[in-house]
Each structure stands twice: as structure tokens, then as C-alpha cells.
Length: 96
Image (cartoon, rainbow, N blue to C red; front, side, top):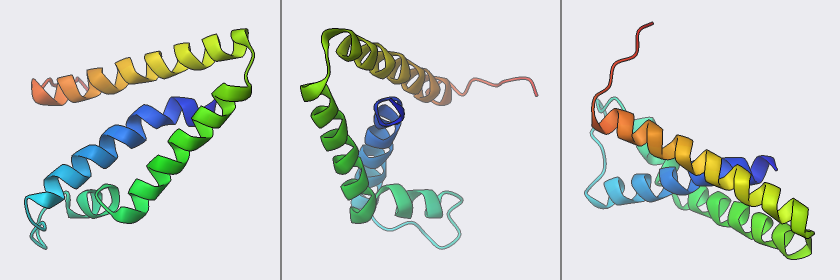
């Protein structure tokens, strides 16, 4: 279940990291340089691909109820991931 829940985050971070790195390497002073280099790396792409493979393999052998739980967990995690990026896009501020 942990892999199902983490997959939306890993997939999006991998896509965003790779997309931004294709625009050019970040400057040494870039505040997100480490993030970009990690999530845009071929190594992380392998991790994300492995996670998808694990989830797909588990889904193949899962019963109907387990598949439904997997799907629900994936959808909820995807919604939270979308909400996070939407919040950043709209520059939403949270009281701390």
C-alpha cells in the first residue's frame, strides 16, 4: 500500500524534475538545485519506474477488494498531490 500511495508523488516529481533539467542545468546558487538534480536524475526515473512495476504486479495478483483499496489510495494520493501543486501555483499562504 505504501508504494501505491507514494507513486503519484514520485511520478510527478520525476516528470517535473526531468522537464526542468531539459531546460538546462541549475546554477550552483539555485535554491532548488538539489531537488532538481535528485528528481530529474536517471536514477530517480528508475525508482519511479520500479514503483509503477511493483504496483502493477501487485494489482495483477490482488483480489477485487484489494484492487479497490489500491485504486482508492492512489486516487486520494493523486488528489493531494494535485492540491499541493495547485497551492504552489496560486501562491497560497498557510498560517504557521
